[in-house]
Image (spheres, one colour):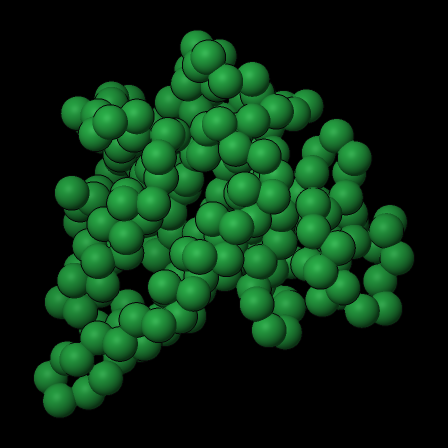
Amino acid sequence: MFDSYTRGKPEPIRVLPRQDMLAIFNGRASFEDGVSRLIGAASHSASECAVLYVALDGAALEDAAANRKTLGLIANMLRARVKSGALAYLGEGRFGVLLQGVSGRDAVAFCRDALSVLDGIRLHWQGEVLTVQAWIGGTMAEIHHDGMTLLEEAEHASCVAHAKLGRKLHMVHERQESSISVQEEDAMPGLDRSQRQGLLRRPACI
């Protein structure tokens, strides 16, 4: 169970028991270190690995008790959808996800499915119906194999996703320095390629 958000300080780096091919990490530093080790040791090539930054906001996270219930629901939803890779709760409504054995299009499909589920959350709480807003940034692990760098790139991509109208998703294909999906690029009207890349290198927006 993801419960690191109830602690004031991150735990020492450790891997919790695996479920099939899924590793669960506690906190950002543990996830970054774990991603580096998993990519280095995996039978999959680095180009078949994607790191995602799943960001959440909304009324269902504002109440402390509802926050815990909502995050537990989201953690279980993500856990059920990752066939091979890793998960971690990073704090403040943010999750890190490593997908292994996927193409860029597979990673985009995973994100679209996750967003559809997250956007559909309706938490009945104390006479109210609480919802969640979600956006996802991600990058393929082609050039960088370091977990810290990959998570930072995914976080920067999430800033681009957050600014979009419609489906809030932005995936980066490092080798080509462009977005995997033309449809995702089209959601950034009026920006040329260099301007889009500049957005990805800005500090985290949240």
